[in-house]
Structures are given as structure tokens and as C-alpha cells.
Length: 358
Image (spheres, one colour):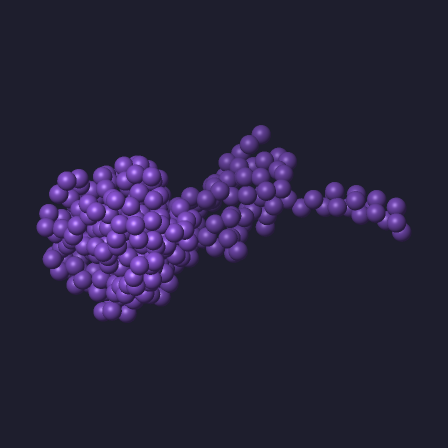
């Protein structure tokens, strides 16, 4: 017979519902904790807008995840159609995929984007399908990609500040991606010529906690910017769409985030212990859970543990769930397992060993 028991643990911790006094020039913007996905500030975050060259974040992450970065790419005729921001690679030129991604992200090369798309997808059309599939996988529900570069005169890419923050947060957990977008200067030699590229992301030079990002601009989209910053254990990403003062907006959001939030560990799998008579000192969880919190709001974070009483549990059986709630909103859920000592079996084998060999 199964029985359910519920244990509630309360933490007096503080959660913000909205930001007061932060006025930004962006049409849409988001400040997100990259680890938990929690939105710390937002303005019109779900309105789809043209995104220009921050499109290239998706192009870059697909190239990196292809595991082909060390392969040599021969520049095809597709490069002849590109205009605007370019790294000026030539038809027939040979360059490693990794180097093309640096040119894509540091100099916003539209020519690099179309060459990468053709190399990875076979055609840009196929690559765009991969972009939209990846967007769906990440949870970007209001995003549609139609090209690999972000130019919008012929085809257009639209997304939201929230969706682009999801993409940036996802990409920020890739070490290779962060190394590339955090590079201020990159030198490369192709089979034809040498290049020196400086990162267009001005925040890397002006803001001490900045770790990377991607710039964007077209006359129709306005200025778009996605950046990353880390300080005191907080890893944040900021997104602005159609913002003529984008770097100021990003610094203001980051200052707000780092000044008002710190990361709290709510569940620690090494210290997880619940007082209960049925599974004393035997239950455990596999994942930790941390969340960014302020020191000024006074709301209750509740941790609920629901255990199912099993008459004869086996080792590592699932016996319940732990749920973390903010008021009535569930913000985390993790399975609970039981560790059963197999003393009887160990005793039997120990006796057999003694009988045979002692």
C-alpha cells in the first residue's frame, strides 16, 4: 500500500516582482540570469521585432555544435551575393570553420555567415531549418529565422528580447562560444591572406564584468545588442532591441542586477536531509538548485517534499519529489530517491567467502 506524506520547509527569502526606477531607451529589453532563466528586468519582452546581426549567435552555436571547427572550408559562390558588414573573404579561399566563426562574431561578417550556413547545411535553406529547429529546442516560441546573417531587405528574422536572452543563456554554457565572443582581438591566416579582427562589442572594453556578446544593426531593426556579464557568482545576459543608446542600457541593467541580487543555494544535494520516520537519513536528490534573490523583498520561498511510502523499496528507487515554490508559482522540481543498505546480502556473501577461503 502506498501512502503520501508532505513535508514543507520555509525559507524567508526575497523575490522581486518588478523593478522600480529603471528607465531605459530600448523598445524591448531583458536582463536574465543565465543559469536559472529568471528574468530580473524586462520591457516589452515578448514583442517580436527585427533582430539584425544578433541572428549570428544562432549561426555560431550551430557551427560550434557541429564539431567540425577544425575542418577547412572552401569559400563558394554564395559569398558573392553578400553585402553590408563583411570580413571580405574571397571565392575559392580556404579557411578553418573556427576562424570563420571568429570573423562572424567579432566583425559580424555576413559573408562568413552565408559560407558557414552552406558548409554546415549544404544550402542556406537547409541551415535555416536547423536554426528554427534549434530555436524550438531551446524554447524560443516567438522566433522565426529566414536567413543566417540578419539582413532584412529580402528575408527577415524576427524574435523577442526574451527569446534572444534564452538563446544567449544557452550559448553562454558553451565554453568555446564564450571564448570566441570574449576575444577582443583575433589574428588568422588563410591560404591567401592574413586578417586581424577586433571585436565590435564595445562593452568588453568599457564594462569590467562583461564576458561577451554580439552587436547588430540594420536601418529597419535599429541597433540590437546581446551581451553577457559575470560577477560574484551571478552570470547574466542582457538583450536590447531597437535601442539607440544600447551600451548605456546594458550597463544600467547589469549594475541593477549585480547591486540588487545574489545567488542563493536553495537545494544542495550533499546537504539534503529531511526528518521523517519512514526513510530516516536515506533519501537524496541528484541536482542542486540555486536562484538569484534580492535582500529587500519579503516573500516566502517554500520547499515541499512529497514522499511515497514504499513497503519494500529497492536501492535508488524514486520515492517522491521536492518542489520549490515562490508564493504559488513552482520554480523548480526534482525527483527524490532512496538509498537502501543491502546489509543482508553483504552478510551472506561475507559468510560464503569465509566458508570457502578461511
